[in-house]
Image 1 (cartoon, rainbow, N blue to C red):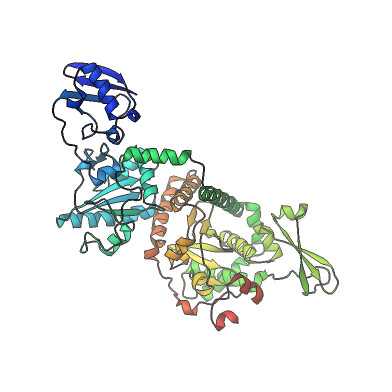
Image 2 (cartoon, rainbow, N blue to C red):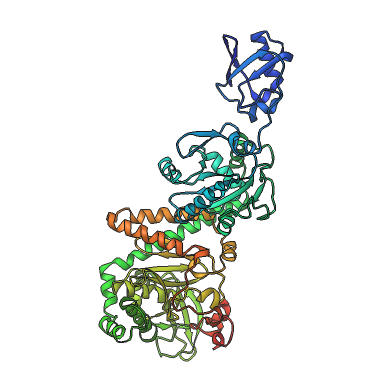
Length: 576
């Protein structure tokens, strides 16, 4: 690399390679300045002097660097602080007023927090004001706390606007390589995340600073040394920005491990399933499909029932509740084994499967189940129809068909509805309640209204991902359906959590882009409100709350089928 050496009023140009070492560089400088290498003082590398080979890289020598040399006693090296080892000693941390400080200006004692966050993330916007309040309170008490914002924003403008709302420092948005390296080092799986470090040692106090602040917003237990066993950063002592960048580059150049391959396959699978869910719900908006469904919905009768017996609900909610009961008890039928379509006998046995024929494909059937009649030996085809309008005519199926057709019914009756897909093999509907200003869980198979804990605490399902789809948005609603988020999160291994958050948000923004501004504003307000409800620690009890012991196991499907799926739950209610 080309560097410049300044000696007095003279400037020299040299070709040098840091890998050659400090002694070679000193000899090169000596050849152009006539200064004895043993009496040479070289400055211009970070905040230290040139002593050994490590200084050339660790202190930042690069193309075009300017070194100043003089003859004299070699000063003692100024060792970098622990935070300089972590972040690099040339990084400028931004203040809210637009000025900056070097990493060396961070506190040498107390606690330093790395706050991984982004403006696009509603949970982040919910936690940031709480963190700011705690930050100001703790500092006003004279305690040494500093926080550095590490942004996951989409662009510099969003970063700057979000940082303007925060009272602490920020890593410059341009430092994407360092941001990624820090995320990898501290195993950041989702945002917001707050990592608390011991400023004196650089050791990690806890990676769950969010929980620490939520539990102790006034800092009574500061510096929280008992929050977790303090440990050194994963990359070890002496780490700096250059070493981080080099390690990151080396990792990307290495052959992918099996784990990385599996992660990429998981991300591809998640992408495919989310796009599939997004595409499917668009069929609910087709006028011909709605007209097909309305031929089978006794809308006036359902509204009459709701008016006569509102079931302690608002007028609009009462209509959906009666629609749910009608669908379950009067319209749709559950299929275990398809009855014989030749003689009508119910004594049939599974005889394998087949590919859908041309007619069945028009009904969006993906697979066809075959059932042989024990009486007449006829083989009946049972196509798993995915066209909601056709399902309103056939009026039969299992949970997939039930949720698909019921979601269409809700939309035909003038309600906003979402099709919710559970990755552990179930499907249901969510309806937006104008009466309660929130999304209500509706399971047509079970005739269940506003019972989101049914699956975890009644059926004993081990949920992973529950994703809600509508024409206007995609939402990860898993937290609505579990009170054991830590256990659920441990099972969510298909893709990185932060990636999933960003991907779902970007898909929703694409869906809303063509909507009128007023509608976009309404959806954004709803989104933020829902994210508060979906916070694991802010779960809102339904009005008709039932204790987990009273929630039944699954009731639809044969006992053998439910047992094989592990959805019987506990107690007599499940067995019945």
